[in-house]
Image (tube, rainbow over all chains, first blue to last red; front, side, top):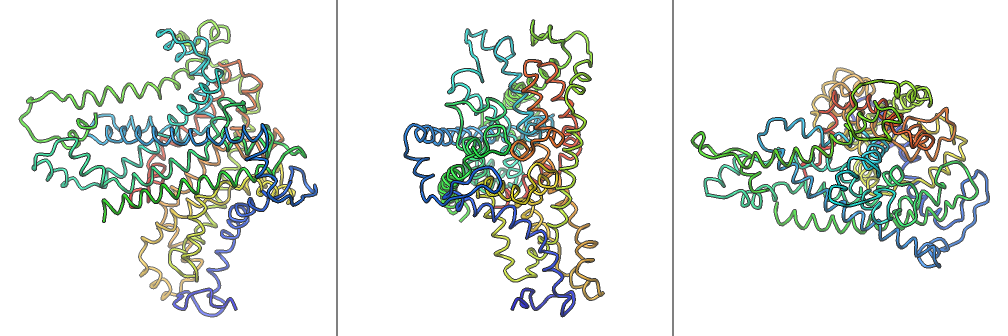
Amino acid sequence: MAIELVKKDYLFGRGWKSWTPILLLLPGFGLYLIIAVGPSLATAVYSFTDATGIKGAPVNWIGFDNYDEFLFRGLASRDNIAALQRTLIFSVLVTGIQFSLGLALALLLNQKLKGKIFFRTLFFLPVILGAVIQGLMWKLFLLPNGGPVSEIFGLFGIESEFLGGQPTEAFLWVIAVQIWANVGITMVIFLAGMATIDEDLYEAARIDGAGGWDLFKSITWPQLTPAINTNFLLNIIGSLQAWQLFLVLIGYRPGTQVLGYEIFAQGFGQTGGVSAAFRQGFAAAASVVLFFIVLVLGLSANWFVTRRERKYLG
Amino acid sequence: MTAQTIEQETPVIEEPGKRFPWGKVISYAVLVIFSILYIGPLFMLVNASFKTLADFFKDPISPVSSINFDNYSSAWERANFSRYMLNSLVYTVAATTIFVVTSVFVAFPIARGLVKGAGALLTLYVVALFLPPALIPQFQLILNLGLYNTRIGYIFLFVVNPIGMIILVNYIKSIPRELDESAAVDGCGYFRFVWSVILPLIRPAVATVTVLHAIGIWNEIILPTIYLTSEDFYPITRGLIVFEGQYGSDWPGLAAAVLMLMLPMLVLFIVLQRFIIGGLTSGAVKG
């Protein structure tokens, strides 16, 4: 039945020997199914149950109850909708600013400048340090009393509690740190894109008398299409799912958390462990809601970039 | 800003000394100002790590006059950082090794189309990039396998990486097929061919994938929070957060701890920068 798994033109032996690729593929692919694909699909199944966080507890089928509660029921649902809105605001601001800033930095560093490797390395550095170190560095830098940012703000007469201040203020600081931490990725992807643009195009346009802005508009921007698409999609999808910095910078605070953090808090408490109080079914339903948002925004972004690609690259 | 920038990409040939390079000056000014946002927090961290607690509370930002490493040794003693560091190392090395070794044998047949449905298999890896992390069912799986709060269970979570797989597949596609044919004619077996001919040839891609995957595990904070409750099993990320919870107001100690745990990554990054940046941008600009 499954004898035909290997193609006819397989080179490395006949008979049982032709099974070797399948046998060697199985461990890696099997692990992928068990750890990634299976659980991803099972999230939808769990979202219809009242599963908790302890082993062997009875799990009941409760239909659309979790969704109903998440979206429509009482005060708690209003918090959930607020978290959902915050997720969207977070994503739009992070995507917009990180994309523009990354492009600006890449344009600056794509010139013949001394020390550009140093700047590139510096701006990229936070990416490899990870959320914990990024967060702790900024917690210190944003120290409310006598910290550097606080002193500078003080010069302008602004007093601020930064991460410990009003929810909206703390939320905006998390956005700032998120962009600070990840703009390096956007920048290097743009730089890699710029490196593929043929220098002759600029030369020819200059002979025709094109100025800087003309060059950007009619050569750099269209030629950069693949990098633009990648960055746009990566930023949208990444920012919708990112919440680690919330955990490190401000913890679980009412009025600040995004959907990803809400899922974690509902499904695992805030400190981890094993508990009957964990609402894993409910968290699974919230995950499915987040998935649909990622799907809808990801697909719209994809539609948008493909249309743009057709316009520029034919 | 943009206008000057582009103009400078390849300076137009002109008589020397004809024009003051405003574009370059403005570019430098912007870059230097932006750099402060990156050097500042790092400098603050280093500076604070050399202060005594009393000095820090009196004035957190004045530069230290003398360097002493007391905070480093006391932070190291107060928390079990050597244990955390060893744990992180074990998790990272074990999971990355399993991932890379198993993945090469998935990537090769997919790239060559050796097996039926190779295209569908690849799609399955691409789709995963859009799926939300499967936290809940994964937790139930680990819990019911009895692997909760164990080293094995924690490593198990990190043995797959769809992006890494896609990088490997794309790279293998660039290796000429003639190689397969001549090896087969010479009577080389499949395993030996992939292991001792293909693997050395795809070393750059393997290096990239290894580094990216290892960084991801080393920096992970959510999964250790969920899966590891015994302090003995903490990786450094979780150890740092717990240390912060206990000694949160002792910024000099915390700064010293952060710096000590940052150092390995910093060294690794400077040595392997090419692979890291190469990996993140590979495929991103080809469309």
